Structure formats: C-alpha cells, structure tokens
Image (cartoon, rainbow, N blue to C red):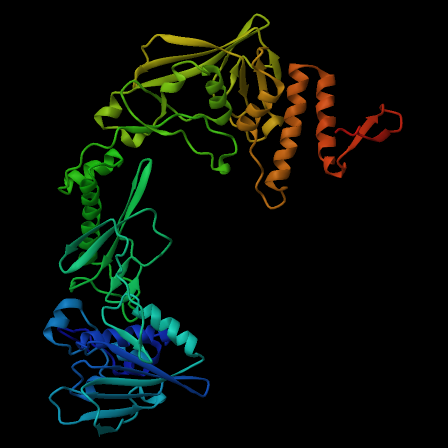
Length: 556
C-alpha cells in the first residue's frame, strides 16, 4: 500500500493500558488531584478518610469551578482547561488517571448548573471497556473525588498529605485541620522574579537530590545551577514555578523536566541570578573563569577578594581533616607556594622555621589566575635540599636524592635552597637557609610509611627524639583503609611506637631505643596498677622477669 503522507495517531488500544501510566501511590494521587483543584480555581481543598477493608476510603473535595461534562473526566489527554491555565503551565489532562485501577466516585457541579452529576467508576472500568452511568446529584459547586486505597492507614495518608501540602499554594485541610505550609524559597540569600516564577539563591552545598523546583506544590529535582567559590561558600539555585508554559514535565509522573529550550533558558536565568546575588553582596571569591562568564552574561562584578590561605604543609594522613592555614588579606608582599608531598612540605616548613619568608607563604590557587592582584604576586619556586655527608653533596627534591642517600644519613650540613621570583620566571638569585632534616621515599610518596623512608639529619639541640616522632607522624603516617586492616587507632599507635624506636636509635643510641620500646609496652598496662603502688621490673635476655610491687610512702 502506498501513502503520500502520514501523521502520528494514538492507538485505541492505548486506553487498555491506562492502569500502567501511574505507580498508583497515595503520594502521586494526592499531588495530581491537588493540582487539578488548584487549576479549577479552588480556594482550598478538604481531605477526609474512613477505614475500609484492607485500607482507606479517601475523599478529596474542592470548591473550584467544577466540571461541566462528565465525559471530560475519562478523556485521557484532553485537559480542556481554560485559556489562562492552558497558556500558563502546559496541563496534560492525565491527572485523574492517577486513580486508574481503583474504585472511585466522582461528583461535580459548575457554579451556574442547576444540579451536579455523579459517576461510580469500578476498578475495571478505567480501560474503556464498560459503560459508566451518569446520575444527578445536589453537590455544591466544585468537585468531590472518593477512592479506595489498599495497604495504607491514617498515619501514612496524613504524612503523604503533609508532604503534598507543604509548598502547595492553597490551604489543604485534613478532617478540618489545615496542614502547615511554607515558602519553598525560605532561607534564600537572594530572590528575584522571572516570567512569573521566583528564583532563589542559597548559600552552601545542596543536599544530594534535594528538590530544587516547586511546581505549584509538586517538588522535583533538576540540576539548575551551582557555582563554587575558592575558599568560600557555594551558591545554588532553586525555583518556585509560576506561569511557565515553556517548561514541560515528563509525563505521566512529572518527576523531571523535558530537556527543551525552556529548561535551558531557566538554567541560564539561574546562573545569572547567582552572579547577581554576588554583585549585590559586593564581594566574592569566584575563579577568574566564572568571573569572566558573569561579565559575558551582563553581570559586572568586582575582582575576587584579594585573600588566600596561609600556606601550611600537607600531612600524610589526608583523611584527618586538618584545616589549611588561616585566610588572610593579600597585601602584595606574599609569595605563592605550591602544594608538596607531605614529607617534602614538612621538611620545608621546619627548615624555614622563624624565617620571615615562612610567614609570607600563601597557598597557590590557580583558579585566581587572571586577577590583577593575584598575577602580581611572586612565588617561592624550585625548593631543593642540599645534603653534604662524607664529602658528597646530595641534591634532594620532592621525588628523590641524587646521588641516593643511605637509609639513615647523619650529614655535616643540610641546606634548603629556593628562589623568590616573578610567576613563571626562573631568573632570580637563589637563596638558602640551614636545615636539620629531610626525607625521601623511593617513589616520591609515603605509601609504606617508615618501611621505605630515608632520613638525612644534622644533630641540633632542636631536633629531639620526640620532635622527630611528631614530624615523622605528619610526614609519613598514612593508614591502610582496606577491609582487613586494623583500626586507625591501632595502626597509629603502632606507627608511633616504631617512630619512637627509630628516633631514639638514630639521635641517641640503641639503649635509648630499647628503653623507649619498654616504656611503650608498660604504658599499655599502666591501667592495671592501683594508686599508691610502685612496680620495679628487672630482667635480662635469658633470665626470668623479676617484678616487685611495693606501697608508696604515705604523705601528709
């Protein structure tokens, strides 16, 4: 058969599958029927319920315009709302079919009608295979819908109704008591209106898939716009929908937007609103790329605040949540500092100590590149350590030593060498400061802790065993996190014991290292010693352990 033209149609068999359009949950039903009441111009909605076998019989009544023709109720996809509603929100004429497959009674009367009408819809009549009788009724103007829902009780209904009413624009009463309502944009930092809708800008990170759109009480999640600030709070957008015919919801569930030009325009409006909120604040810490984007969208912002974090070295255990340095206002006298592996950064920080340069180091934030105040800052560049031991000078950078160092190297001198230079420049004269400690690892990172660390040190009064333990803890301890690993506390305690043994051995002698191990061992059972008691322990490698317990002298 040959056709010159064809067009899309809806098969009559579609109505036979109508019971599959909706999940049939009480939440979906309430949302759909409340939306119909709102479109009908109701001043409020009343909900009641009574127990029936295996569930509840729910009644939803409104005082809206009513329905003049009962055939409209069961015309799938024929909304037939007036022009104001049709032009304002793209109604689909599917809401009543959220009841498909459930026994229902519907009554309605328009304001000018002499009487109303009533229909009883058996559970198996939604598919169009049975005639449904229409009777007259003396109902007041408006619409009343009664239906049975299995498997729920009053508590479930009231909870779902509270959720449906929370951001609904009309009063919703359950057994005469009005459910609480609130503004969807409560807590917004900035609100502006667009085409009858309201865009709210909120500070902070949005919770995962928390609703970002309120469609007249029906809430849904959409990725509208989020912008981060460097060292500052995120901003994100939420929308309280008004008259937006250009926005369409995916039918029948209405849980997400159709990805069309209207949604693209809304997202752009949210982005502009975020930038305007920052312009209203008069300050921000946007990356330069976002700042330029705002300007292209017509929002003039000042440059980002001239603030950076004071540089602090990383620690090997990055999951402990150690805060970065304090945020400080930039004067132009600061030096940008790159992030370094924990063992290298800790050695740099120790070497600089009280040197004035240490207090001028700020963490590099490449997102700020392009701002005039940032681009004018100089940088602390190309740090290396020069370790002189046995007449050989070893060059140590963040990755390795050249030539390689012994596992433990007592050096004659260690110096930290660096340059203070214009960004990207390598022409400045190099400077140096004396140091007493530096670490290396075979692969440049502390994956195996003390097992792989190489230590070069110079004996100084400031480098005590306990101080070395603290530095090793920050520079080397990184716990295993697989399912078979011990707890963080157990791994950390073991690391500290090993670090103390190593520190006392290399800085004092073997006897001091042995003593530290026994102090650690005894410390783990100190809880067993009652107050007022003294314990003396003596033994050698091949003799029994002698333990004497005595009372401490009483004191007045």
